[in-house]
Image (tube, rainbow, N blue to C red; front, side):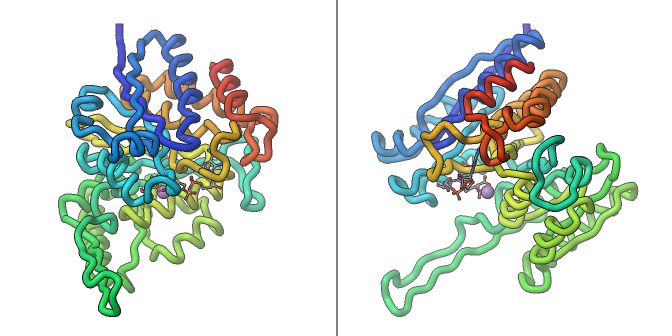
Length: 353
Ligand code: NAD
Ligand code: IPM
Ligand code: MN
């Protein structure tokens, strides 16, 4: 019998929607005949930090390294731990240490969901953001000199490697080959960021030669954000550096109704390490503890995880259950103008499964 070992890390704030994500996974496992062995961990949270003075135990790799995948909630509680510490010692460490260089983030207007862009139908917004996830603007290279003085200087370098850019661009083109439209859009800023971004453009041009069947275009990131709002139907696969991809993957889901349903896979395609699946949103301190967070981002992330593990049918079943539930205001949470709370939405998805 097929059984998957999953490391479960809920984290902070509305990361605690995790039980709803797990409820959907367990329902899918029951109906599709596979097992789940869940290891719940309390680290990568502000609570853990308060008790231990660090975000994760020294032997975290022994604790999660043998899992088939990591199911992650959200991290960040800035009142207790500064964000750059909590994130660099947890999520960003997973991405780097496990070489999860692809951050795969679908953007889809679901049937029945109120769309903030006028006149848009579900098929009009249906694309993937492929975000570079281990280098780029998120670099540890830099320095802080003469702190607190008039001579203070801070420097943070953007790091792009040929290996790193080529592999994310190739991933995007490979993904486009599996889609009907076979179109790749590259996010750039080679007019202003005049060393790294022209390099990025050049590598996209070079890799594109390997994919004569894929059409492509590129936009500078500033106008690309406008095009997401004005002409979302133009996009199929959007490949972007780490920071640009971060921005686009909140903007896209907001254009499709809410960031509360957006999922992501932090993927090591070579499967040398576990991949990590988490909603795009954060810990949302402004609504944490009220039981009103949308659990669909977590649930959809679970579907992406099952797909990665080879359970494509179970993943599709979760997605059609999500679609059912999102159709009616009673199924939707408040961010989507519905009347459901976290648990009732999660239970409705599981029941539909
Ligand atoms: P956020 O995504 O947590 O929240 C932004 C806004 O969206 C808030 O108004 C929030 O209420 C709303 N929102 C988010 N998810 C929702 C959901 N599921 N249902 C309903 N509404 C939802 O972003 P932020 O406020 O910039 O960050 C808060 C904390 O989370 C910070 O500590 C930040 O560093 C961290 N963060 C973590 C992750 C992660 O773990 N992957 C991602 C983003 C931000
Ligand atoms: C995301 C988040 C993280 C990122 C933060 C919390 C470091 O915004 O997963 O999109 O910037 O990658
Ligand atoms: Mn983000």
